[in-house]
Length: 591
Image 1 (cartoon, one colour):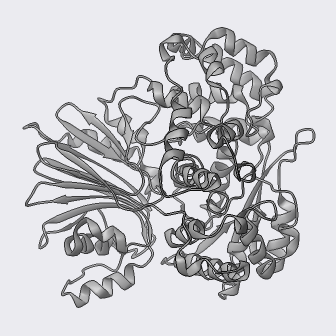
Image 2 (image 1 turned 135 degrees about the vertical axis):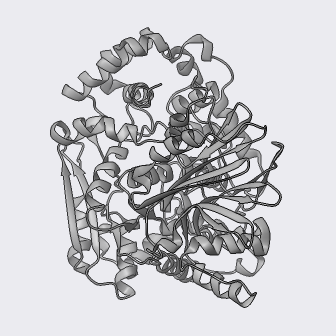
């Protein structure tokens, strides 16, 4: 897990190595263990290293193989790199390191960009070819690792974070109108290729982009799950699917133990993270480090789930660490740093929870497993059951998920941003695609390929990497995702959602953490804005910079300020915080 950036020129101007070094320095938190820059001809790569596999200097990056004529900058982890290494050695390849980066490099030489089909893991990488001058950019199947691009005069820059591209200069920073609509309407989820800034784009998940020396580019989508049961699986019963899912999850958890350092677990106390702890214990892990975070309660809004994480910690004898966050003493002072660490503005309340949790976790371990993705893969959200037999699936999904109507959006933003209902069009386009016939499968596919990538997954990547911590997500093992997509909906939706996971859980972990109301990382202070938090928000939306920016209509902002508790989204978020967070992010990024 690291960060990288680079530049390719399409003219006779030299690569700006000074700008590249500045971009690389902006990602220091992602890779505190080392850094490097490589340049040849019209291409340059830079890298920040977090040492997880092969801690020696032999695995330093950018990695160059002069014999093969390739250079690579890589972020992520290939969990089956040892098996691939053995296969490549049989083909005659010689290795000078013991890590996964060199395996990616040799695999690219052996199989071209089809090498990605063999990778189990999370990854983004750039490969420069000496002889052809070609550059290849790749992102993993589910977008776990980020990759941003920005066109500059005569060339292209790319990097693991949007702020790194800003640090290099020359990026158009005006607001992208399509992205603003998604941010305000589609629960702050801005799908690729858009970002909130017009001058920065992101590579979509499961995409290979080939860039020629003259600037020509082509993209290839290399993976997409089918939501169809295979003929040989149609007669399988619930118990059969349990066995298949449990076997797949065991494999996914085991794969993510590959490291030359200790691996911990982010333990919320819910089903998903508790299952990970249980399966690790089943595999013989002892003295596992587990971590939970909680906030103070506000009225009836409970701010922690310690009672459930404690059950798991006691049951398995983990070394459990609980971080209690007081809004006045910890949340408010750390909030600007948290927002600065966001590659894009993320409105979910639990971002600050992950930020502060990761700060504590990084003092103990460099790698953790996390339960993100289980709800989107195994149908854990409340909007899935109503989709069964829906006569208006697009409308039903939008009413449950979207933050405000298009009409309210137009009341909220400056008229220069008025236009089409981009978010509703996005939902309709995805639901109209083939490969998922049932409305609930259409919703699951949209959430896996769009919402998951640009909300929970991005949140975890950004907040853990802000402290040099690598987070691995076994529920997003691509083979497990494919299996879940093929499983009939009734085995996901029964038992109030995630039915098959709950059935597995009752066989593996204490029932008390399963048979209870669904929870999440609650941060009441960012849902019901009061006291010092409300004062901070008021200062932000009334600031001179906000007035000059004029994103939002003043009358709409005042309407929210007059009664913040009355303006809560269907997904239990504060509309006022959404407005303030965007302004705060822009200010923290110096825009």
